[in-house]
Structures are given as C-alpha cells and as structure tokens.
Image (spheres, rainbow, N blue to C red):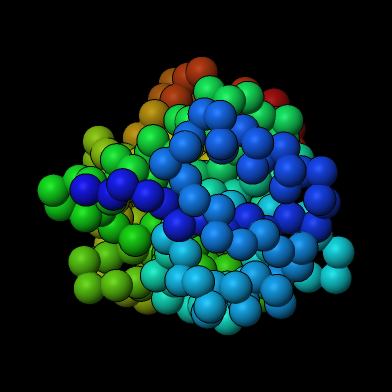
Amino acid sequence: MINRIKTLIVDDEQESIDILKAMMQLHVPEVDVVAETRNVQEAVEAICRYSPMLVMLDIEMPYVNGFGLFQYFQQPNFDVIFVTAYESYALKAIKFNALDYILKPYSPAELKNAIQRFLHKHQAAHPTENHLQTFVHNLQQQHQAQKIALPIARGFQFVEVKQIIRCEAMGSYTRLYFTHQQPLVVCRTLKEFEFLLEDYQFFRIHQSHLINCHHIHQFVKSVHPVVVMSDGVEIEVARRRLQDFIDRVLGGLFR
C-alpha cells in the first residue's frame, strides 16, 4: 500500500511548476514533491539523489526535450506522467505504449485521474507489463532502420517496420506476419497498430487486417475485390474501405 508518492517535477517554465504543485497540494495531497528541476541534466541529478517513484515530465524543453532523460535511464525504476502542451507526433508513441500523459492546460480531475492510475497500477496484485521500458526501447530504436520494439513474454522483439507484411486482429491481441521470421502474437489491439504504423504506409483494409502497402503483390478487382500480399495470402478489401483504398493506395489507377 502506497501512502506517499515521492515525485519529481521536470519543466522549464517556473509558472507551470508552481501551478502543478498548487494543484497537487489541493487535489492529490498524497503526492510529495521532493524536487523540481528545469532541464534534463538537473532531473538526472535529482533522480539519483531522491529516487522518486514518479516523474512529472514536460516534453518540449529547450536544448534537450524530455525524452532525453531516457538516455540516462534505459531501465527506469520510476514511473512517468508526461505533461505537455502539444498534441504532437510524440504522443503517438506514448499512447501506443499505454503510458500516461496530461495535456496543458489540464484540470484538477485530469491530474487526479492520472495519479489514481499510477496508484492502481502499483497496488495491483499482479504487476503489469513495464510499458515505460517498452517505450524507452522504441525511443532508442527510432533512428535505426525504422525499428519498433514489440513486447513479448521474455522482454522485447525488435523488428524493422519494412519486414512487417500484415497484421491480423485476434481480439485484444494482434498476430504480425513478417518476411523473414515466424508470425508473432503481441498483446496490442489492431487499432493500436493502425495508429502506430499510419506514417509507414500501412492501410486498414478490413476490420481484421492491416496491411503494409509495400507488400501488395496484386489487386484483383471483382465482385469481391482482394489484394494478394507478398507472402501469397489473399485478403478481401472491405466494401466500405474500397474507395478509400483506391484513392489513397492505388492513386485512382483502377477507377
């Protein structure tokens, strides 16, 4: 049972720090702010000194953004709630890895909910997957041949995006098919993969299938149109997705 939450605030704006501290005192008194820092380097020193359980981390800061913190802590033993004013590309990775964040300006209710989720995770009888470590691995890989880290039972499986042929829904899980390895089942929904991979020319062709457009071998236009993927598998194009598929993927070539 957690009674007090040792917390570090990292934000380059003193006004933002003061607002957050005041809201915490009023609405989440179980939080103890052990330090406040204005940049990543100060944050590293504070983490080593105070060993906080929770870091409230701003993303957009001068010189080094908040993600720079994970260059120093590759296997964090603290939790993070990201605090940002920007609904940006960065939130895609945060959301995919099931991490918590609040958007400025946030309400007391949003702050309380974020802290409650932190407490719920730590009070659970069976600790859940360390989503922050998954996020850190993905962050480290983002400049290396467009790789992503997929959580598996023993840790992480690193794959190049270009080697993913297609993704198939399995309820709360997704089965991924690759060019050079056996299929892999991952505890993420297909919708989450659609969100993560939308910038890599993946297309939700059917309720149950997300395909890599680079691996389309054929498009067969018929009463029930299908695509033939590079692994030889035929996948029907859902009727409601057909026109969008033609417009976006085929560039109107088959109208």
